[in-house]
Length: 392
Ligand code: BGC
Image 1 (cartoon, helix red, strand yellow):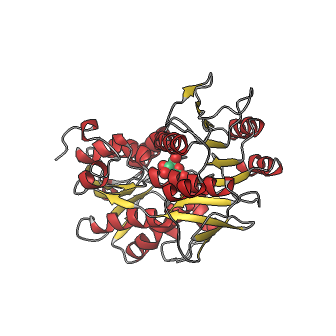
Image 2 (image 1 turned 90 degrees about the vertical axis):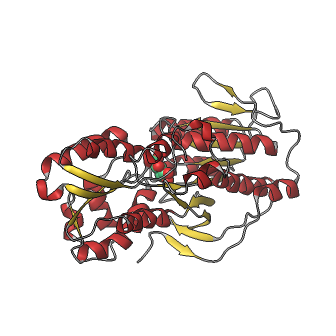
Image 3 (image 1 turned 120 degrees about the horizontal axis):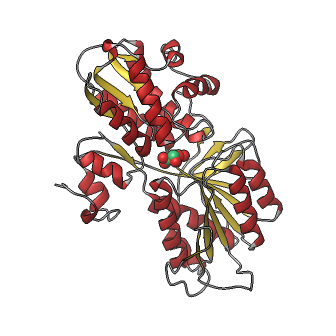
């Protein structure tokens, strides 16, 4: 199975602390001493380099409205603050125009490194080209920026493995028999990751659809392609066009409602649901739970958002994929440390962004269910047990 834009080339990278110590980066960071500006953005300044408040590392994240990105914000502020860097985190709030303004704001504050998670992977090219022209090194964070050579590095989770784990979970937890209804949902088509997640899931689900074990309930495009193990990007795009949630809880809810209204009784009973992430999984799960003709559902997710961890403990969501934002933020900061110290950051793979092969650092993922929630998320120190009820 072809992985979109991805080619493996080997492996190695030390931890961020090693890099931070080795380069002896700037002085006196004392952790997260951030303050909120008028726009609700957070600035952590460990060293004030001038009246305009020079910033070394600028971070742009897609939205505050999804808990996923607040996890990343927290990690950046802690790690960059501890490493002694002046930094600022700005949110694009779902708008590519705001994202571009945010990048321009950070350029005007003198950043040397931009870490950016694009709202729209193609639209963000204009913003990063501006940054490059200003001499800034650009690190695409979690989402690849496409169609431009103005991306220096990419730091990401193994997104193909995320989709694969979701699909495999559905297979491993499917009821016995054949013709089991399978509902497919995907992320936003403006996000390259949505393609990779779907492709990962398709790589394991497709044989089960082709041999009649599962029946796709809500996508004529996917149904028409059920015998194709390898899909082109255009074909995946067609499926996503039908089953996208736009990464939006409300879109996910209304799409699930419309799907359940449209199908007959044969597509209810015990069902499987590929939900692309936790926010959409909770919305979709609520819709399936309230349909009297759905006897049971297995539903996937990703991000280990607190609300979904509680849903898993309560038996309302089946699994999530833990993407440890501590590692991703640390990897990005390690890169920034190298760049600011004049060194070339270590990478272990490349992703093609339709223009160039972007050197990338990729990190692995962990499947979380009721069985290992304690070990994966509490004992690892990611969350505190007191944040949940009913934990065993
Ligand atoms: C991220 C996911 C996130 C989704 C919606 C994706 O690009 O990889 O972790 O749930 O965007 O924000």
